Amino acid sequence: MKKKFSEGPEATPESVGMSSKKLENLYNLGERYVKEGELPGVISMVVRDGKLVYQSMHGNMDDEAGKPMQQDAIFRIYSMTKPIASVALMQLYEEGCFQLDDPASKFIPEFRDLRVLDKGGNADNYTVSRPRREMTVRDLLMHTSGLVAGAPDSPVGTLYLRSKMYEGRTLDSMIKVLGGLPLHCDPGAKWNYGISTDVVGYLCEVLSGMSFDEYLRKNIFYPLQMNDTGFHVDPGDADRLCACYQVGSNGEKRYELQDEPAGSSFLRPKTYFSGAGGLVSTANDYLQFCKMLTNGGELNGERIIGSRTLAYMATNHLPDDKDLAAMGQPQFAETTMEGIGFGLGFAVLLDPKAAQVIGTPGEFYWGGMASTAFYISPEEEMAVIFLTQLIPSGSHPIRRQIRAAAYGAITD
View (cartoon, rainbow, N blue to C red):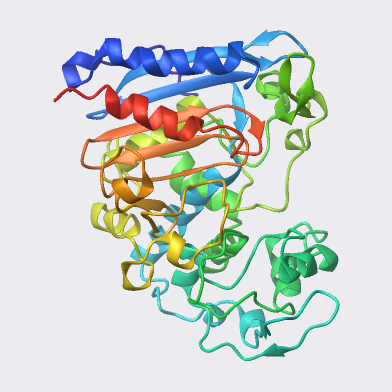
């Protein structure tokens, strides 16, 4: 049976040590961004002590159709796929299928002879050398693998684009091409956000013997009743897919249509199951995932991941407890860098003062390209979910603002 959508808060803010009045700041943020033409539509949710205590909807899910935001709207969550994929692989770790320090080549023969692009090289003229060490499974979860994004802002990213490695339309065909391309840097040397989590999804396939989408359905989506989460939108639910926008000029609004629902590629079944950014989901579905994380890996009697495994994932794994600023790429949109570490699939708040954000050390989180975001604070037993559809994700400081509004509503 299909799970009903959440019909409203499960408890009052005051019953869990939060202020209804202060949560109006979160409401006002959504209203302001929509009324000022900065965002098309918004859904916000706050969970504390395992209970949904706040939710609000603002604006439209489709401006062109004049369709107001609705609770069962389907969003492109892009990189908020990564934490789901990482939890999936760590389930297989708990089964003893691999060790974190195993070379990735143990399971991916195409990675046995990887080389590193020598400094000073470009996509048209480069030499390669052997890496100082092999890429490990942990490197893939941490984005210290030496893999980057398929984008023209780096020589290796340009080579990805030229290789047309996604044209085979499966993770297996991508891996075969990727194995013949150089790494951006030595594994473990730098934090480089990119396609590492696509390889995480491929490892799930190799280790489980299932396709990645099947594995997620069986081991995460079905037990959590995330019935509307997947790699495409079923035809019968096409009218629930939000329009997606990008920063631009559209009259008084500061954005323009990027992907209209009726013609979206997300309406067609996929064969390339991207762990890095391929999923669509709803507010209610991602709420179930976040409740599970807040509750130490279990929800409604379904144990998804062990509590100690999850705590380990949400610990900073960067060498010498460094932050991202010490070894990451500059001007990155999904998170600030100072005072922020990275675990196995999540960013981790190390030092709120250095990060210049209110929060609790140990908070873990991530966001997506279309400005979606979530935060989990184990200390406060709180989760915050924010969904909208505007590319790129760094267009507004909304992620910092919703954190301030949610933490500012805590009273105990």
